[in-house]
Amino acid sequence: MEQRHARNVIIGSGAMGAATAYHLAKRGEPVLLLEQFAIGHDRGSSHGVARITRHSYADPRYARLMLDAFRAWKDLEADAGQNLYLRTGGLSFCPPEVDYVSQVAASLQAIEIPHRRMSGRELRRSFPVFELPENYDVVFEPDAGLIAAARAIAAQLELARQFGGDRTQVLAECPVRSIDLEGNKPIVITDHHRISADRLIVTAGAWAGRLLPNFPVTLRPTRQQVLYLRPQDPHLFAPGRFPVFIHKGAGPLDDFYGMPEYQGQGVKLARHGGPDVDPDVEDRRIEEPYLEVIRHFLTQTIPMLVNAPIEQTEVCLYTTTPDEHFRLGIPPDCPNLVIASPCSGHGFKFSCLIGRILADLATQGTTEIAIAPWQL
Ligand SMILES: Cc1cc2nc3c(=O)[nH]c(=O)nc-3n(C[C@H](O)[C@H](O)[C@H](O)COP(=O)(O)OP(=O)(O)OC[C@H]3O[C@@H](n4cnc5c(N)ncnc54)[C@H](O)[C@@H]3O)c2cc1C
Image (cartoon, rainbow, N blue to C red):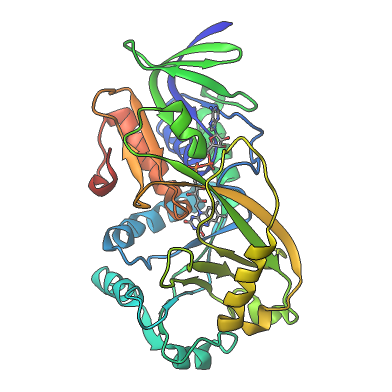
């Protein structure tokens, strides 16, 4: 077994790990990034061409954090010399008995982000493909849109290599088997290495709970099923015509989201939430009852898509905390360890900023970004 020493070890090359590698390398820090699978694999939470981004959050703390996140993406786009954000506009809607849109609108008001509140009936005039019940509550945010997910991760890894040169090392197919936090420095054990790290950053997604059995909250991996539909008239569902959307229903399994056709993939649609899973067991099935649930949702909201053929499907993992809030920071008893579990199904839009925060915590022990609500 090879003995090594490294200044900054990152475990996991998903959205959070790639962003952290980019920010550390940009500051001149050496980086050793360990990934158990191939880079860009589809077994975790970050694969796929796009993710929704928005300031539209019912919780004003996330809405405010998105101001910093939008700036972080802009900086990344400048560094990468490519556009990663696509402004499509975004809708949040709910039935009248659900107090969601009113909270989203209040958050947007508080951070002075332009938006328009309307009813289901008014929405039909602006976006005729949405046939919501007339009394639905709706808010439109013109700045919501898409982040080109796979490209963003690839760009950050590429920048980490460009900024770091030989000082950035990415080891794929290199599972970390255990972490020893008992001594002065964290020790990371892989099949071929025993690495002593000055700082260890764990961004291991659905596997984080296994690597860190003492993590203060339960991290529950859940299985998500995603559909890409081929509409009869694709122009109606193109960016610019069709916004990203979030539907918040009355029950825990009544939340849905979707986005326009992007890069020829079809219209993306999914229900938020799914059953608990073992992240090591690959299960690519899309279940018939799930398809029924999606069809039922479409009948009530976007009937034009009910019979649209399914072009492609994806299965993806959430790492869900009990209250669906992020958890990140330096554990009180372990100053050389930085942990981030910003998933619960809504973390991608923050990932570039999270990378900056984790780099701050690793190098300075603190960050200027207001992370108190999520700190360990
Ligand atoms: C279907 C779906 C849709 C989503 N939609 C949105 C959206 O629209 N907007 C939004 O903001 N967010 C969205 N999210 C959430 C967002 O994608 C996640 O928050 C984000 O991708 C989490 O990234 P991560 O780096 O924490 O996890 P991951 O991407 O899973 O990365 C963790 C990495 O660690 C590696 N790893 C784990 N254990 C080890 C080990 N022992 N050794 C080495 N490597 C290890 C894994 O292989 C993996 O590559 C969605 C998520 C899913 C699944």
